[in-house]
Amino acid sequence: MSTGRPKSSSRETLSEAACELFLERGYDSTTVGDIAARAGVSRSSFFNYFASKADVLWAGLDERLVVAEGALEAGAEIRAALALIAEDFAPDALALALVNADAMGIAAELDRESALRRARVAAAVARRLAVEGASVIEAQVCGAAHGGAVIAAIEEWARHGPGATSLRAVLDAALDAAGSTLPRPVRQLRVVARADHFDGAVTFYRDVLGMAEQESYQGDGGARVVILDAGRATLELSNAAQIDLIDRVETDGDAPSESIRLAIEVDDTVSVTASLLEAGALLEAAPRVTPWRSRNARVRGAAGLQLTVFQELDRPS
Image 1 (cartoon, rainbow, N blue to C red):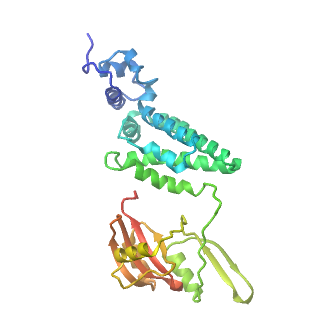
Image 2: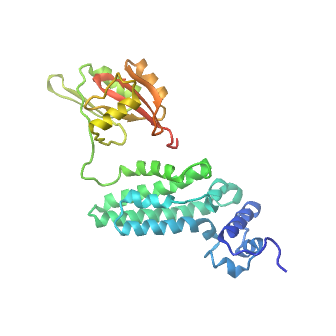
Image 3: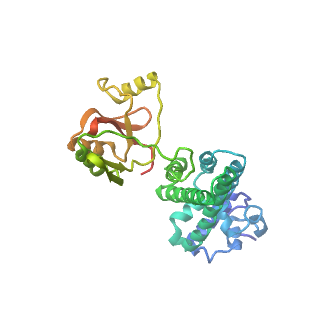
């Protein structure tokens, strides 16, 4: 007569039984037979749901990778296709294993299996880019970045507590990081600003705000230029009604937007704004939380540039 749980054919019950045993005995010391017995099902019933012991951990992700691969092959935008991986991704055996790898004795196994999924995503993205005419190097580098982004997001999500953190939010942040490797007709957005007090402006943006210096040149007649890294560049085009709306939300009505205003995303609006003010910036609007869950401040920075300093409050740190 069998012992253990009441007989159940659900995949969830088998996953729970497997995780319990991995924690109690270790991954290597747990067999498929052990998992089936703990779940109260036959060994053959186990194989109705999983192809192997490792599949208990990876089946949920693998199913989503199939969907993402299909979307890429069908022509979906790369970010949109990979975002499908996070849809309805509830905490499961993989998340538990990632945060209990040492206790389960499964760290090496997770590294091997993660590498396979990372390479799988990389290959799917590279194939898609190759069809669009990207060079081999562009396709391979971009594929590797996006494969790494997916696995890194899942690992970070698990570490932060999958029940309390949105995988989609973490994945969005990872895809932001990988997005710079995507081939684009426009390679870079560069804002050119006249700075009559040149050294002071360089100190303000490079040393206080923290934009890393990438290049610098000197020319005839005292000509000087410094190019600073400002992170991911985007161009936000807004009509008059949108500008009025933002000004109402972001200011007290006494600091209207100029034709061009630089918006700089940071990790902590309050502390960055304080540092900028200490360095000589003029406060136009104190930090405040917007209806879109960002904390925004507006200052007049060096070289006369109007700056919005903003922090996405729901973005994982």
